[in-house]
Image (cartoon, rainbow, N blue to C red):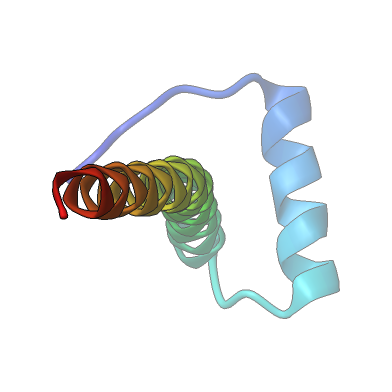
Length: 86
């Protein structure tokens, strides 16, 4: 269980919000608000992970292109060396 204190004004604001939103009680209202915060936090974490994954994919793509270029250069150098040996 969680207990917390609020001022009289905050309590009245919560009661009004409960009535406006159709919450059965302040406990339901507070529980829903806490769940929303947790969900929003999780969404932020997923967003951050997706951004990091996109950056990783860009880096991986860049490295793949570089390796391909080096392989082509190596193949060109080998074929040039082989031609010179004949």
